[in-house]
Image (cartoon, rainbow, N blue to C red):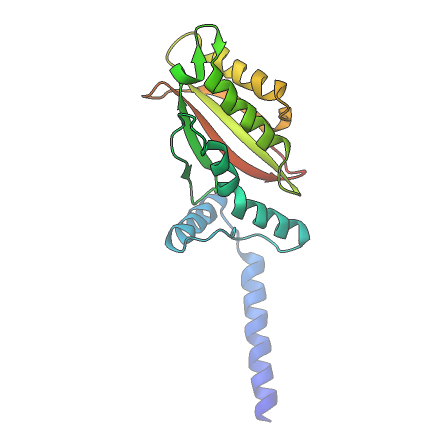
Length: 190
């Protein structure tokens, strides 16, 4: 008799939570804020709210090693700002001064060295992922759009897949190009 009562109570609670879950309406904005808050409170390399299967496990592993892979890109003597990682998105950002990245005729020797290494990194993404970079050039003069296009052309010429590159301009207080690295699962919408 006590076992039947316990099981009955358990089934009633289970039914209550099923009904509660079926009538709830998640709000994407609040969910993103909640996940960002949890990530800020409990830093981890594992993404929250993801199902687990083989493809997801590959993505989690790739996301975990992204800082190391991008770190190797900028560990040379190139004049690149230290890496910054956004814990809520997992994206990694670095900057390079425009006067170092470009010279009067186009991409400088140091800039070309960075873009060549970046293209090699983008060309061989971790299994099951697409490593992407967004290059944002400080918008302070008429040449900003041309500089952004030169970055894209140089990356593609050095072997980076076009699907992995996004370029644009942004308002900024410093004259620099900002590179933002991130991962997408293969087949994910851009």
